[in-house]
Length: 278
Image 1 (cartoon, rainbow, N blue to C red):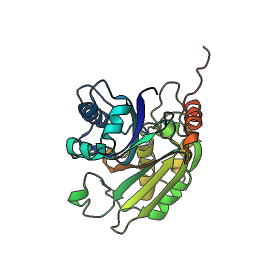
Image 2 (tube, one colour; image 1 turned 180 degrees about the vertical axis):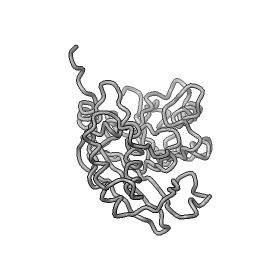
Image 3 (tube, rainbow, N blue to C red; image 1 turned 90 degrees about the horizontal axis):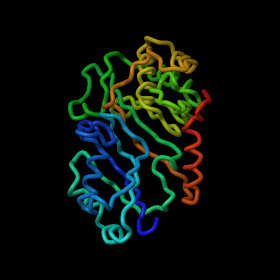
């Protein structure tokens, strides 16, 4: 880009008081707050192309979100070494930019990504959630069996049409490849679901979690979530788990920067289904 530098921003946020990532008129969003702060530093006309790896919903958190923005090359060179500290002093406490790095022009935070990884936190403790963690952990009212949760998860790994778990968008595919889906208990007894895929459609992760939780507490058999994959539209049987238990923890990209462009092109072809005649 003539006279501009593409900059990767690694971002973390507490989604509690945000209406999601995407800018919306009259609503407080992560993109809106971040763009406003960048405009104060670089000027409102200087910041273009703010693009995110994954648009998180209202209430969802992130510790490993990635976005990119295009900045005037001279202004970036002048502020590169101090930008993260400057943003720290200007952003509200529920958003942090952890790193700002110049990247090749063909880096695309959304389309060049090879995977997104989320974690969902649940407690089945009789007393519920510890007060200081109530904004990041879901309290489940029934005991959960770890083996049953992992049995349910196993049937959802792989490439499938996840229409039963997604809010379909016109001309967009609901086919995704889940490369990791498992549960563990941490040292505090919190159940942690790790879900990784090439990409996710809207509400997919929370829908998967909702389906697995009713297996974990014994109300559904372990093969029930995988059986829903036969559906070609969203299943009314699936309850979407609340947003506050979900955190985007990592986004992956090709190790070789020379592969950014080809990865982005491949993703664009995969994500949009051709318009059918008639």
